[in-house]
Structures are given as C-alpha cells and as structure tokens.
Length: 448
Ligand SMILES: C[S@@+](CC[C@H](N)C(=O)[O-])C[C@H]1O[C@@H](n2cnc3c(N)ncnc32)[C@H](O)[C@@H]1O
View: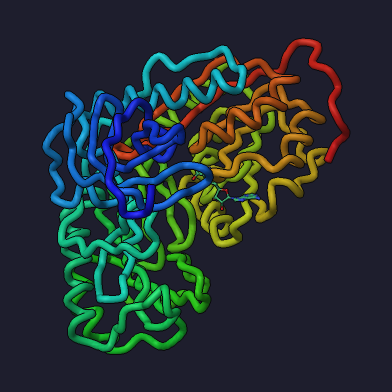
C-alpha cells in the first residue's frame, strides 16, 4: 500500500494511545477515533514503529457505543480522542488496557472496574492551548505535531476559559503577537496556558512567547483581566515546542493560583505540576489515605511531591513527613502550602528522587507518584535496599508501573490495585497501588 491509499479497516482492539487497531496485509493497522466492532474506510498516513497509521475517511459500520459528541471538534481534536463513544464503553476499554498490561507483566491482580469520573466535561483545571502558524489557537490533531485546530469552543476547562481563549485570539488579530511557526522556528506567540482553581474561582493565564518583550501590555490586560485573576508573560527562548516558560513575569493579579482539595488550600506556581482533575484528585487522595490507614507510619516519604499535595493532605496520619521533588519552584510552593495549612510535621527538599540519602530519612511508608517514565532504577534499588514497610505507588502510566513492579515484586506483595478515570474521553487512566513488604523479604542490593 502507498501513502494516501484507502482501504477498509476492521477494528478489533485499542492501543494505549486510544487508537482502534486491526490488521492490513498482516501488519497492525491503527486509526484514531475508532474502537472495536467498527469498520471504517481509512487512508494510509504513515508507518510508525512497525504499525501502519490510518486516517478515518468514513465510518462504514459504527460501534453501538458511538454517540453524538457534545463538541463539534470531537473526531479531529487530540484533546478528546473518545468523546464520540459512550462513557461506559470508554471505562470498559480502559479496564481492558490496564488488565492486559497487568497480565503481560505476570501480575495476577485484575481491575474489576475503573472508578468513573463524576464530571465528564469541564473537568480539567489546566489546558495548554497552542498557537499555530496561521494564528490558530487551540489543540492539535492527535499524533500530528503540525496539524493545528482553531478552537472557538472547548469542553475541557470551563466556559469562562473559552471566553479567555477567544479574547486572546482577538488580541492576536489586533496587536503585534505574531504566531510562532514551529516548522520555521520563528514568530512570537506560542501558547496560552490556562489554569483554574475549580474551588476558588481563580484563573491564571500565561502567555508563552519567544524571547522578546510583550507588546501592548495594557491592551492585553484590559482584554484578558475580565476572565483571569492572574496574567503572566512567560518566555520559552528555545525552539522546543513546550509550553513551559523558564522566564516568567507577572503582569496582572495574584502571584499564584489557589486550589482547594481534601480540606487543604494549595498555592500553585505557573510552572509547577498540580493534579489536573480537582474532583478526581480528591478521590485519589482518599484512596491513598485508605491504603496508608493500615499502619501509622513514623516517617512518611512523599517522593515526587510536587507542591506537596499528598504529603500535606496526609500529614495528620504520620509523625513526620518528608517531601522530595525535582522542581525547586514547586518546593518553595510546598513550604508555603504547609505553612498556610498549619502543617508543622513536614519538611521538603528540592532534589532528584534518585539522589535521596535514605539512611538519613529511614521512612517506614513511601508514596511514589513519578512522571510517566516511572521510577528511576536507583529509586527502585533504594526501595529494595531499605525496604519501607509500605509503598503506595501512584501511576499515570500503567506500563511503567508494571515494569517497575517486576523488580519491586521481589520484596513486596501487591495488596491492591485501583484504577481511576482522571481524564474522561481520553485513553489515560491513573493507578493507585498498595504494596506491602513481604514477610522475610530477601535482602536485595545495596543502599543507593
Ligand atoms: C506526577 S507528578 C506528581 C506530583 C505530586 N505527587 C502531586 O500529586 O501533585 C510528578 C512530579 O515528579 C517531579 N519529578 C520529575 N522527575 C523527578 C525526579 N527525578 N526526582 C524528583 N521529582 C521529579 C515532577 O516535577 C512532578 O512534580
């Protein structure tokens, strides 16, 4: 088959990116926006890692789970790969993905059900809307770095966030905010990052640009301030297509965003990680608290602690908590957050998890919540050498968890695995797992 050729594709499975997959000429063939039981006519786009990638042209036989999506961009936009499918079916597909990964890793546990999200729209508290070379503002088609969608609506953040986005689009037409061109590496306006405190009504907008001063500053403030309690100008001077801005200047309003979860108030720095679904983050906290409730740890280590979410929310359950995080700005926030919540038995350190001196901390319980790549081998080595009684492993990537448990399982029993839907209409799924040290766990490795 040549690129551009069309064929009929019968979908029999989904992959971890949420693409429906079948077979063409003996090779795995996948297309976004399809699920099992569907037959589609699709055009060959590319070959990636041995897979053939197709673009759907026509749904010939729709799945019974196909529904009319609320968003007019569903079926094209990478923000909601599964919005055109019934929510119950989405949850079922996620369960299948997690269970297949557990089985492939030789783990006997299975998920009975993924905990559903109570809110299917406007559930996110952060969106990174990108600017395309023709002044598009929105998101991209999935898997296509240069296919920008100019969204005048979006159901992920909030109606007021859409007003903010549309006000910024209007500004780009009026003042010299030349769109960034990520193919030519030139231009100015790159991203509009919007974060919301769902429970505080606060909203932070960060205009991310290349390295030059912001023009028409007052005009920008006048246009965006009705929808944003904080406005930052962020500079990403590199050619890398990232919304992260190493240089930031506050141009309007509060310095930080405030959100409330688990009865605690958290300040969030524009560049710091924070759990993206406020309602489900509370459920995640409750799950982790339940896992830890079997013991009362003397020292609880919160590894990859961000702005202190788990450590602060759970400080009442341990004599002492230590939080470790790479992002120094997040650690400054974590300190402020402990103080504003009156949590005194907690200490934070900006450090790599893999550089931690375990002999100093001697934790008897550890929460690990690493990025998608999972645990650094040195962290696994340290956990196996020091063997805290309990590890609660929170993972946004079930494949990383399964890989890491292949090692951790030498000294730990997996007591429980729960899966939670933090991101409706996407294939992502969060795991919370409860690991307990095996009785007579063998001595493994040396302290890292
Ligand atoms: C999934 S987030 C979890 C944050 C936090 N537990 C929460 O719930 O808000 C992962 C965090 O790990 C941090 N991180 C990434 N690599 C790290 C490393 N090598 N050592 C320590 N922290 C790291 C990131 O900055 C991010 O804040």
